[in-house]
Length: 210
Image (cartoon, rainbow, N blue to C red; front, side, top):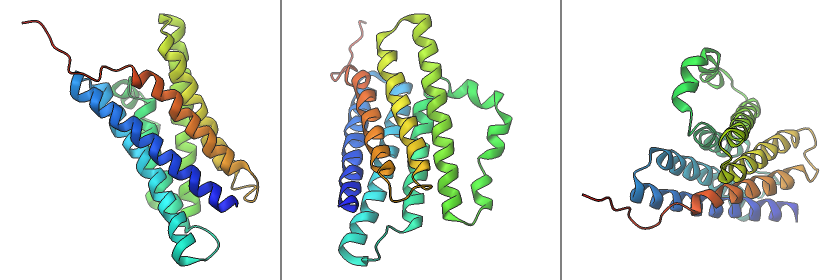
């Protein structure tokens, strides 16, 4: 039952992320906004990560029958999602982040020197949590400065995604608990919260006066 639930939740995450990615892509084509382009890459990456994990669960359920998903599949899906979380968290400040963060640039190749997929997944989830928590805090600070209501939805979405990554990391400590399904629900809720501001992007081409 738990295996089926995780399969359904990953499929749901894939469909929700894909839907938001399509909306972002339409908005980018109609407005030419670089931010929407980065969000398109982000949501398609998150959707692809969910798809990889869902495909792993499906293959296990239909063909492999080993009792658990392959570790490298889980790690690959988590890594792809981490790329998407990076683009979401820093879509508004990606240029100013890298020049000031030499220590972060040194951390990027660190996974290449590790051999354990479990260690890689821990690193991916930790990086995702840092990205998302940073993005949520920056967005809330932006709201206090500008009082933009859309920032609240973004901050809530990033916060739920960060909580989901934290619970996902903690599920390694208690592998047979409900923490992993709770992590999935939190992340899907975060994606839905992020869908609200994205859905307000014009879906028809913007026309400018001559």
